[in-house]
Amino acid sequence: MTNRPKAWLAALLSVGFSPLGFLYVGQWIWAILSLVTFVIIAGCIFMFPQLPAQLVSIVFFVFSGICAWLAYRAAVRFDDDRVRPGYSKWYGLIVFVIATITLVIGVRSFVLEPFHMSASSMAPTLESGTKVIVKKWGFGNYATYGLRLFRTTPSSALNRGDIIIFEFPPDRNRSYLKRLVGLPGDEVSYLNKRLKINGVPVFTTDLPDFFEKQNMQPYKQFEEALGDIRYRVLNDAERPAFVPGPSQFAGREGCNYTVEGLTCKVPPGNYFMLGDNRDNSLDSRFWGFVPTDHIVGKVIYIVQ
Image (cartoon, rainbow, N blue to C red; front, top):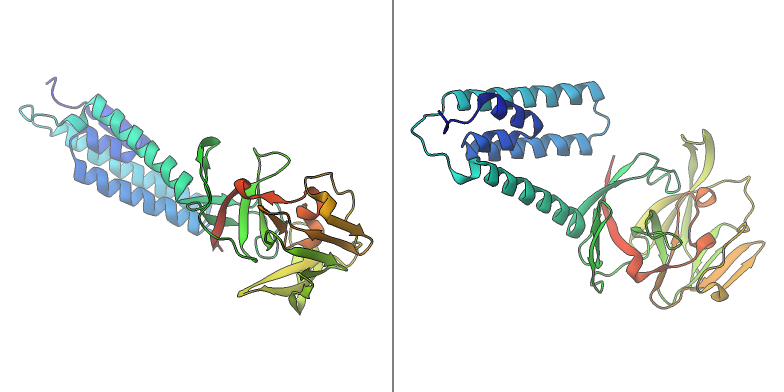
């Protein structure tokens, strides 16, 4: 009887993390199927945030219950003469947990990582609460969950109009998400609430007003085009054009602030960022440029 897995422990492990319960009872195929199912369910919850919380709870409860029941039955029916494989013993389960954690950290650090907007500075493109998928590879800044692995020289190119997540220059422990409008060497002008790059006005089209939910008020809405990227921006007609209280930052000597706005020369190895909600965004106009080694990744998918 000492060889037989304990039925209660098999059920408990399955409730905690279904693959563990199945591995414990020697059912590696069930473990893989349950892991794939778990990932699919979690992915659907992330991709469809509008799903009712009660429905999500019911789905997870039913899934965990089925897995616990199957693992319990497998443990009860386990043949005493059967040799338990190494992966079903305590050290095998520990190796599996470590491998799973390593895989998750590796994917989030080097490949793709989900983020969500907690403010409305990128509205209307990204409203508060919007979730995004960020590409991490090629930008040389590999970290997740506050764990910094290492940094390398970036190999992926950035383009004007990209939505970028980066370490906030005044406090690198915080992450900001803004739109890149100025590359190294560019002259960026934002005068009278109109954007120019190297003296050329960015193509702008008027759109109907946008009602911003967080502040519960309408804003003037426009479409801008940077290269092949088109996006919407908001302006508050009640806000003045000048930049109030910009801080002292590296490279500020290359910026000229006036009552109409500002003009900045982007230093080598730096980028100029703006929020799409132009009058409700703390961005490069206020705290300066983003160095290359602060770039975390680029948004490649927006969860609607």
